Image 1 (tube, rainbow, N blue to C red):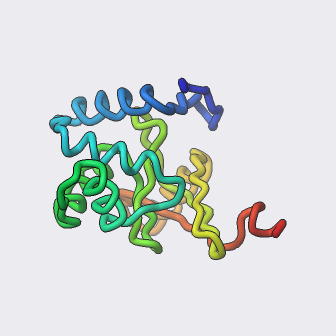
Image 2 (cartoon, rainbow, N blue to C red; image 1 turned 30 degrees about the vertical axis):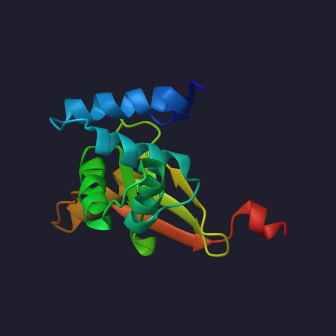
Image 3 (spheres, one colour; image 1 turned 60 degrees about the vertical axis):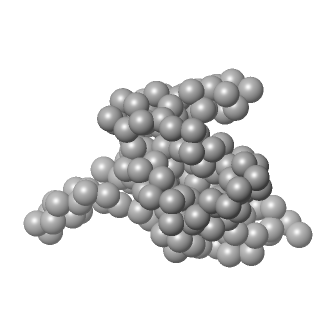
Length: 161
């Protein structure tokens, strides 16, 4: 486990995984002025171990099992909201679910490719598309605070089966 560099115009990303991801998330959360508590660490670990977008209920179930006590989905929702505002996670709007951000030190608008068959999501960072969307909003006297673009279809795995 470690990190790999992904190139996205106009800068490079450090794509974290494993313990590096956990440390990067902790550093980003602390930098945003939030605390890294044991419960937040548990929720982040649960979110990071899933390979598909997860709802607060899904995460609450995983944390409840790992801690041997019931964790309320409402508590998880609040933590996930903090993670989204601190750039540790992204919300997949159409699924009302969340995915971990593997490079929390770098902010981007979200572009998701959502597979209608398996539910998988591919997260793409494309500064050119983000810039175009913001410029289009400005041309229409609108200040874009955040954009989320979801493209629905089928992933290559589902297309081949």
